[in-house]
Length: 465
Image (cartoon, rainbow, N blue to C red):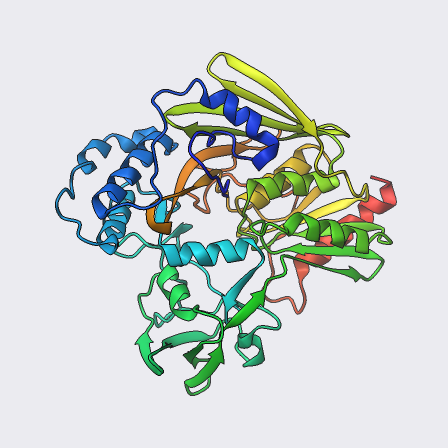
C-alpha cells in the first residue's frame, strides 16, 4: 500500500493529500533533524547519498538500520553514471531485507504514473511478481523477478480487454519467451529468462505507435511470434454486473488508480435496483491509502476507518481516521502531543444495502484496509480465505533525475487495532480473517467462493441485516 507522497516537509500524514495537509504541517514543525533536501537533478554520488539520508530518516523498522552507517561512503569515488548510482542504491536497499523498499528508474516512474491515471502506453497485458513462500523473489541487483512458468519464462498474468494483446489473441498463462523491441527500424529478440519484473515491463512498453514483437509459448502448441503496435490502453479498475436474484456484483481489481473511487460510485449507482451487493477483492494487490479510506466511505456512514504508525524525518507519529455523516476526522499524535482536525466529508455514503466482501490469499494492502474497516464496523460480512497480511505501506518519494524511492514507512491497523501483517508480507502473517471461510475449489465447474457469497448475501437480505 502506498501513500503516493510528494514533497519533503509533509510526509508524515500524506494520507489524503490536501485534505490532511494540516496534520502534516502540525507534525512537521516539531521534527528534528531537518528534512533531507532532494535536488531535482544530481550527479551519481549525490544521488546515492540522498537516498542513504532519506532511508535513514523515513524507513519504519529502525532495527534494520543498525549497520546503515557502513553504507554511507561505501561507493565514494566509484560511481560514474546514473546507472551506477541506481545499481548501488538498490544494492544498499537490498541489505534491508525488505522487497517493498527499492528505487524505481525514471522510465518505470513514468509508466507507474500512467497506471495511476488509469491508462498507459503498451500492449495491454499485466505481469505479476515471482513469489516463493509468500515473499517476492529478487534478482542479484535487488529487483523483483517476474512470475514464471516451471521452465523459467515470464507469464502473462492477464490481458486487458480492447488492448493490442487482446486483439492479437494473447491469453493469461502464456509464456513470454523473447521480447523484440524496435530500434533503428530493427526488431532484436531478447531472451526473457531471469528478467526482473521492471526490466521486462520496460522492454514491452515504449512510445506510442512503435512496434514490439513477443515470442509466445502456449501449452500444447509450437512457439509463435506476435507483433503489436503500442497504443494507449485504458485500464478499468471497477467492473460491475447484476447477478441472478437481483444481487449486485462489483469487482475492484486494485486501489491504485486516481479515478478508482469515482468508478466505484458509478458502479453502486448503476446497481441501485439490487437487493444487496458483493464486492470482490480477490487478487486485489492494493494501491493508495486515499482510495481505501474513501472507498470505505462509499459504504460506511460513520465509524473509525483506520490507524497508522508512520515514520518521517526521523520521528514516529500516529494518525487515526474516522467518519461521521458529514465529516472526515483525523487525530494526529506525536509523543504526548495530539491534535484534532476535521474536514468536510469528501465522499458521502452511497448505499446502505447489505454487503458481502470476497477476499483470498492475494488480497493485500489497501484492500485489507478497506475490508478491515467495513468488517470491524459491522458493515460487511467477509467471505473467502485469510488475506495476504501485508500490514505495511510505502511512501513514494521523488528522487533526483526523475527516479522515485519506494520506502516502507508505516504500518496500518483496522478500526479494532488489529495489525494484519508481520512486516514481511508473507502468507503466514495475520491477514483479514474471513467471517465465512470458503477455500477455492479447483474441482468446481463454477466459482464456489462467489456462490457462497451469494448465499450469505441472501441470508443477510432475508434477515434484514
